[in-house]
Amino acid sequence: MFDHFRESACFIAVDIGGTKIASGVVAAVEPTSILFRQTRPTRAKEGADIVLSEVLVAVKDAIASARAKGLDPIAIGIGAPGVVDPKAGRIVYAGPTMPGWAGTDLSATIREATGLPVAIQNDVRVMGLGEATFGAGRNFTEVLFVSIGTGIGGAIIRDGLLQDSPHHSRGEIAYAPCPDPQGRYSTLEEVGAGPKLSVAYCRAQGLSPEALALPAVMERYHAGDRLAVEVITERMYCVGRGLAGLLAALDADAVILGGGVGTLGTVIEEPLRRGLSENLLPALADIPLVVANLRTDAPLVGAAVLAAQAVRDNG
Image (cartoon, rainbow, N blue to C red; front, side, top):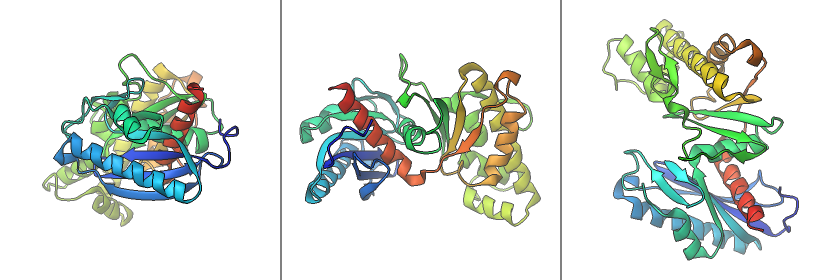
């Protein structure tokens, strides 16, 4: 995909998060190398217009830095929170952490301000695209990317392409059915997202649900706290069970595990892997679980891939 671009060509990559906006310059001939990186606050609570103004500043700064290095920006790729219509370049739906974000015409605004082609997708999908193309999934044809962090999100990537859907929600695995440790009906996000793990531990300890954040719970885990080990292990096993059911419907060559919680190491990976392998259909028993390896570069690498695909598709 990247071998036909001239040496000076580059992409502007942007990852819009709930608290910060990361941006970077990615050379077309070396798409895993972030040449310029900057972060700035999202200011989400101040409304969509303020967020959009911060994104524009990030993009313009990245363009200026690229040109100062003798590079030629040819397209912009953006990962954005919410349900995204990639063809219209618009935010279809956004949760309460991004007030007023739904309806934002992101692509048109940035295209008009820069004169460059703009491609956007959901932020987790873009992260998954980076991992599938140049990270842990690069040797597989079709992958399910699972990001476990503050929430749980996902992406389905086939032949290096994100799979869109009629309502643009393909990959929203947070709401997939998942049993909790008591066998009750729940969802992947309710069982395994970072804040849910810490709340479950606090309640089991008889503490206020907000008494400890996940890093403090993990400290207790590594110190041998029996209850912390039990809560984390049981809940990650349940997430594996939920993913096994999801894979029965979707099928894939591999599962890529990413996100701030998903990449914490064997404490998360081992029980999740066990829950997955013990509950997969026999025909799917050889589906591997691999851990994301691009880390914080994944969203920007994925945004560059998205931008490159837009250039290719538009001739």
